[in-house]
Image (cartoon, rainbow, N blue to C red; front, side, top):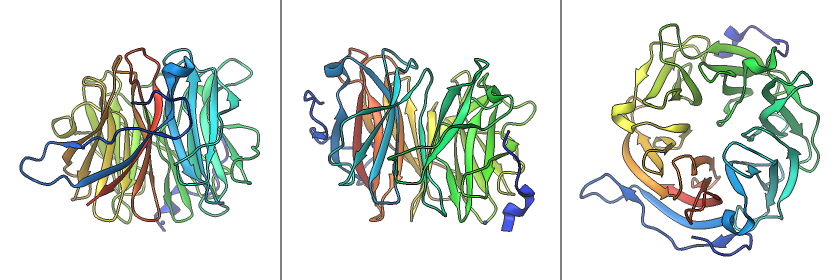
Length: 357
């Protein structure tokens, strides 16, 4: 575990291709919503295939994207022979906001998922994290940083000690002023935890365990700040029968009772929360129906409505649907995700741009 740099209590003071070419655009689809008689609140444009899995014979999954300090988009994802079996984590660059991408670079050798990209709030450095083996053969979340917009990278530092106490930090990091929050989960995928940094992501301390004694076990968790000191966490259920939530009133130091969001959103994998001007958006995979979904809340996460199917995919429930939203400066959202298109269990890496009305 990296050293704690201050008392956490002081925190209270803050996206159907057949082409192999990069950036191939494919037929635009009409968003499907559950709103009857109402105009959809969402407009989808610029659907693209970034990498075609069946053409390359690879299983591509779990993408993340970040805008680097030089304005370029950096994209990373797993490449391997099958689900959750990675040869390497790819790194690619776009200088035109996701229209075209540089050739794939096998940047990091990997045996485990999933790369997470973030931008440090002070320096603008790019941070990447994924599960990594240590010298003892234990697997845990580790992070590296780049001070030149992703051209060179530092060595890796593990979050936790023992390193397998935090297996992965697979969802978006929350930036609150100068502070960074990283939701993770343990090596048994039974408990979600929250990590905190107030020195631009150089050092991290474990702030809390999100699920409480007696709660159902959870792992992949998205977080959002929904008030001056209030946080919402939405989590994947370990046994995949529910979607759970928790509220913190003190910026993640402690968490309240577990809340069942299943009646509102169904069973979601890799929930991602994104606050935009007029709504809190919840993205996630419905693996039971092979759907990538988004919902909206207009009351700070108490209720989620406007269920919208952003895309569907073929293959098994695990062969698509994990996504990563990036809020652009124009208010639109650039979304990267993976989705099998031809029933071969060789998912593509795709992107789209959406605007919420």
